[in-house]
Image 1: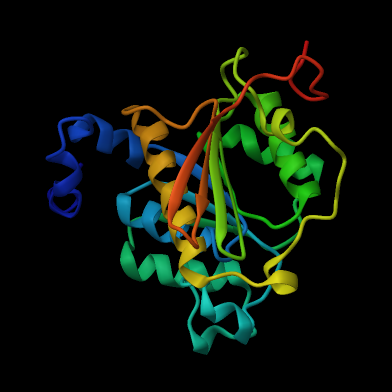
Image 2: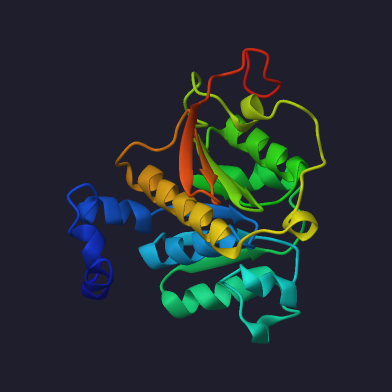
Length: 247
């Protein structure tokens, strides 16, 4: 790290669990963020601010007026712009040293199988099961940790799937069906800070995994009831009949 980086990341370096070595791991890391909406916005901003060396933003959508209620990486002057470009501009204003690459198309299985091996972690924030399942498949295939989050109405959930630990569950162990009918915020609505809460936890979990400290949410599903502001935790177990990770 140069002197400027030491100053920028001094509050991380001061933490005994991170220190200079942990910060260097972040600087040397690559993270793929799938979806630059309500969840991906805080993930992208916090990972850029935290000093993750390379970020890959994947989203094919453009910024719309209705997004601005919750997708905090985008501003009014970005309406009509690709979300990846808008988020990149926001993050580079926060930390110009971060390298940000963008993918402005739907991620199919072939693209993911090529892209995921380049990454140290994947953070998933899309709103449909086919994308979630394809991302999980690639992460399991290449043993890359996956941070999964979802939010709808007043509720949210987040978990981390190890990818590199064969005794741990994958995302399909939690959702083993072939449903492609995930509810979306456009259909049912969402309280804007809920996606911020879940996305911020996703960012924190990603940093923990990359810098190798703390106890990430491996094998645990954290559930938020935003109406009562109560948290619940469910232990996740490997599904021996999982179509992705069972032997």
